[in-house]
Length: 463
Image (cartoon, rainbow, N blue to C red):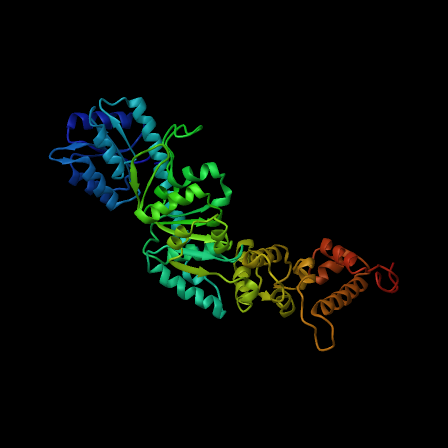
């Protein structure tokens, strides 16, 4: 059954029957409960999607019933039903976890619109829950691959950060894996069951960043046609990751500082203070000390964020990690592409290790992914790497004075010439024997200045 399962919590049997019949006439499956105790029992026994809860339940209130249900199953989406004149109580219910409220007597057309939105929200909550389970596996500590002493130091601080509730400031060049560090802290912490929400500061215009962070009431600014829930509210119970914090506008810096100091904030257009339980992790690829000297970043905000500093070193300073990372990415993408690739040749790995990696781990992952996609043999070789990648490897000179690049060129030239001779100059055959594509062979022939001349392009005695 595709329709969401409804729970009607109402102590008046006539009203309960009326709501049930209207819902069933629209195709919704319905379960009834006459009290707070019965509501909790229903949630424990059945996969309730949406709970429609009356405010008055005998001597008890629907707010208590909602708290019980959410404690038993956070995926339930409650809706409060209240009598006219009790709007303050309905608002109280929303703050306690209800998705929305509706006033008696029920207008079922409006009620159905609220139910549709609630059902969509509940579906989204389930999808997020499944995604979090996958993320827990993807970003678990065992996927934090390293062998270098520098990254061992990072891992030690990371584990301490995971046991703490203090704010964390992660610094490092673009592509070093700051987001992975933040996710690993979250997934290794008691907050791992809560949401992990990441916000890239530069991706949003300065005029929208406050609304994105703190939310906005309807009409707070042009285009605000309905209430917007900000990232702080959405991340309640979990972690909010603010990437590239150095680009945060000065006005937003003030509000972020206030939250870190007082643990409360205001939506744009509202005077109502809100409190949420959120752990903040920030990251930057900029020199915040320099920004502070220029007056572009608040010193007091820096000290609030920099309680646990984690500096992620660039890949060129931790080359010991490269072979492990290559193996990790190779297995990851070979499985995705359905290829049986056993490893990488020593020559290819040597070129990779000697590369400068201005793009850090992100660049390395891109190179390995690309190599796996185009690989036609069971082992990645030099031919599977981008030519420009090999040319900029900066290899050390060998015993005879030749660089690794010279040796690679000489070896590739010999192999290509031999393959062309043996294939009679037929490039498709030569490419197959070399284990590369015909297009790649053509590119290498042109790059190395090879020709299909007598004795080289065609085997003797063949036409």
